[in-house]
Length: 90
Length: 300
Image (cartoon, rainbow over the protein chains, first blue to last red):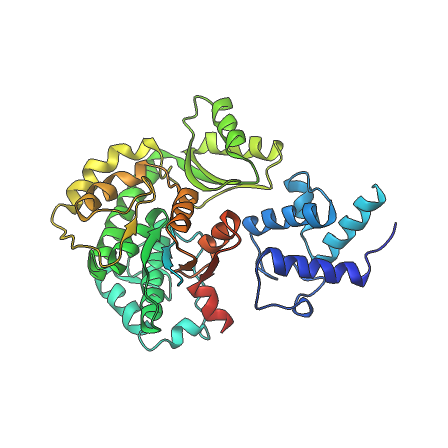
């Protein structure tokens, strides 16, 4: 199983900033392993909807339901791993 | 030339965080606002409690939401911001009315508390509930209501093309959440309410609320206020009827935002502690500028 590289992680951080219009943040301010919801970035379900759409548009990756979404949106790293896995046909 | 709408959010869903170092507490008038509210209602914002009284969580949230909106409104005005129009979501109407000077701050607080206590009483006996459904389109949410025919569910908030809030009895709401998740919603979860707000089941309360408002003086609003149910500006003479009926009617937030954009509004400022409406506006139209006064303060 391939691992997510730094380039992909950087692109996902940029996706989060752009989709969620977080103009005050730069990619280096988002910790790769920090929780995205609750404590960490403090995202909520409306943000999740934006990220689902963003992943689909930018990476052609589908989040099929809430259960998958919960796993994928744990952190930037889990998002990146999901993108890699989907591209590999897992 | 930009035109600005001030947006007053509905009830917070969690206790607002106002730690010692919170920038709002450094506002020179913060203490005065908190004391004015505490003097009238015995509710203390900082300890999030009523002195000498145990009340429900929602009543405390309603008063905290009202108070925080009024504090943020006063800060925005002091900074020179002037709304071309005011829009509101659900119980954001009380602060919207006070901000537009249709009623005084004290009357707005009194209305918030009085209606809050009626809702608390009803909630205790009605077994109502609400749920937020994110990621399903209108037809899919309608289908859930049809499939659960008999549970008296209704759409309470139209927040965007894929964001709805359902009202109904607890059992029906729990079933709706399970159905929504099985039909691939991104999120389906209970809100804090123990009552089915903005549903026809509450229409029976309108007479009691009307009587409550009888002696209240309504002045002409200084800034126009958009009615979240008819999506037209509220006339002074309609305000009491609106207040007594709106809890039995849905909130068409998506239509309010679309109407405002059509009217030339290109800047939305959420007059509250969180960024709930700001995020909904972002989903409705990514091009318009929207920010929350509370968020902006934290990021300064």
